[in-house]
Length: 264
Ligand code: CIR
Image (cartoon, rainbow, N blue to C red):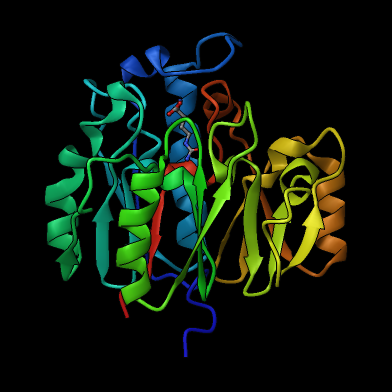
């Protein structure tokens, strides 16, 4: 019944980075992102999503929130329902509130988490049947419970998993390739959290490639990962490579830059 709902999408929402993106959070300083180049990369990303068959919406920058370009962290979408998140970084907490009016005008229902806990969208991997929710520095037990409770009503089995130490989000280390297959780093796969799924592991040294997204028939992969490209194309996936150099300076990747959903 729900076959393919994890990657068949009709719509996306992204947000452009503003000038303040140079103040974005990062675990390690690799230099500030170039705001103009970041904007160009988000625009190219949105255009590529459009070519994969979705209607795209691009929101204006929110200068009060330097990390708001990473819109995935502010909401989880299931079909015609959106669930605003409670982002775990204090400087990001208000992003969900800023997004609310857009969610209300796009979705049939906006459901709030019944919790004082925290959960970032980057810690949530939805397959057709399971909701993997990774505990991390941004997502806690209470957040897991509250989000899992809502997602269970939409046919997902909540699976509490753990984001590896020193990794920002669960999905920093994995991405969905199809209904049964997940691309993941060895360090995450070693935790044994993906029981029941076929795994393809990121080649050594290409762990950052794990944060890929599938939209309809296309798998979007970050640039600079030649062995991942070869592995995935040998496995039969239709790939498109996109440059995310500026997002990477703030620990972001492909999944963070959009909300993807199916308004059937
Ligand atoms: C942050 O630390 O929150 C941002 N600089 C990066 C967020 C990346 N989002 C994601 O992995 N879903």
